[in-house]
Amino acid sequence: MSMINNDAIISFDEIKKQKEYISLVREILADKFYDKAPKAFVHTYGCQGNLSDSERMKGLLFEMGYRFTDNNEEADLILFNTCAIREHAEDRVFGNVGRLKALKEKNKDLIIGLCGCMVQQEHIKDKIKKSYSFVNLLFGTHVSYKLPEYIYSILTRGQKVFDIESNLNKIAEDLPIYRDGSFKAWIPIMYGCDNFCSYCIVPYVRGRERSRSSEDILKEAKQLIDSGYKEITLLGQNVNSYGKGLKEDIDFADLLKKINDIDGDFIIRFMTSHPKDCSKKLIDTIAKCKKVSHHLHLPVQSGNNRVLKEMNRKYTREEYLELVEYAKNKIPDISLTSDIIVGFPGETYEEFCDTLSLVEKVGYTSLFTFIYSAREGTKAAKMPDNITHKEKTVWFKELTDLQEKIAAKRSLDMKGKIFRCLCEGKGKNDNELIARTDGNITIEFVGDEENIGKFCNIKVTDTLTWIVKGEIIKEN
Ligand code: SAH
Ligand code: SF4
Ligand code: F3S
Image (cartoon, rainbow, N blue to C red; front, side):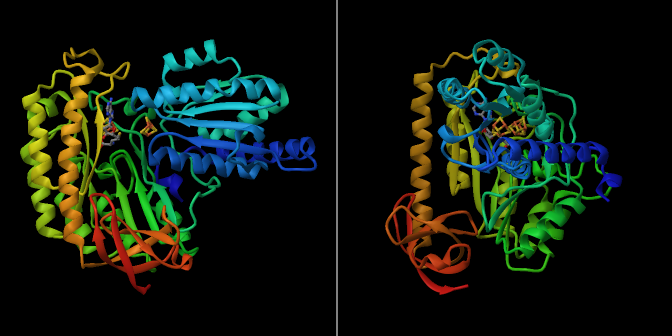
């Protein structure tokens, strides 16, 4: 059992206690809502890790008897799972929470809950307590498995629940999951981050790195594949440090291989790989494992060595480029993507130009680009920053224009070629569907809805910068 292999697992008794609360809440709600099911509106901000956490909280809510709605006006419980990565993310949450006050005035029994990374910060917790008194449930990232207990307290005692435990650093296993997709699924393989990049809030709000046992991950993957899932994305802030602290001797490459060995036709994706821990063994494993996608999200953040050092990234431009060369040699069709921060405190225009030249050299498929946002409590927030936001937006535009040119060329190179893709759903235009290549590029094509959730071979017929059009060659 995983508990024997992993000290980070929350005890069997604690999980059992939460399951008992689920039953108690279910009875109370059945009584209260005797002729209809209570409804929950769960809204998720931020990254895939947060989406995955929400699926787990929804699993608990579903078992308690809640059903889900997209309309907050008809909800009996509203839960915002928040993100703190940039100021803009937090501003959006505050704006949306403010609008809930009117709903609470109409329905005094409405439970309004906030959880996730943003509320894990002391100053945000205080602000909510002070200025958003209609919020009656607030809990941090370490304790989301206690949701049944919290709901029980509110329903029986009518009191507010605020729980921002910050030192638990544990993993809850064996709880229900309510998945948003029917053929694509997230599997978290590790939680937290120990890297403390100087700009980043994640290590403060997510706690220390801890890995799930391979046994638990493999069990989840097998169940998904047996029930017809076609794509599995392994999640972690730094998947390359998977396995540290476990009693079993395993690293991320070993885990990939084990999942690849599961019988069935499916694709394995993963994110995020920190370049400092991305081993040649991992690249060799991707090359060898047939089901592992040839896509590597390898955030570089900056192409300048001084900036990288100030960011505490622990690799140099040269080391990064060497890794990219190795990957391109081993996996010629590798698709590389990255995150980049523009306007880190103290960054000069010349240093930013090193980022431009690196982007050109690597030839990324796509980029996630961000203007630096100061996060309270991080090291970078105290560094002098002399470049105006306006200047940073000019640099930002220069970067996105460059990437657009690179992407247009990459798209053009796809023309006439055939790609095996997973068809994901309807496109924007009538009778068009979208499918995703192994390298994580979407193709729009005309096809029957029956293809959704299946693999198909698609020939690229036309390309614009970001839009790739194709036609279906053969199903399956
Ligand atoms: N663990 C991942 C990143 C997770 S956060 C990694 O190390 O690569 C996703 C991205 O948000 C980061 O890669 C970074 O580019 C961006 N980001 C994080 N903090 C930021 C900040 N303070 N301002 C702007 N962008 C930031
Ligand atoms: Fe943030 Fe760095 Fe950790 Fe990524 S590796 S989550 S950027 S501290
Ligand atoms: Fe993710 Fe945002 Fe938290 S990016 S880890 S939800 S701060």
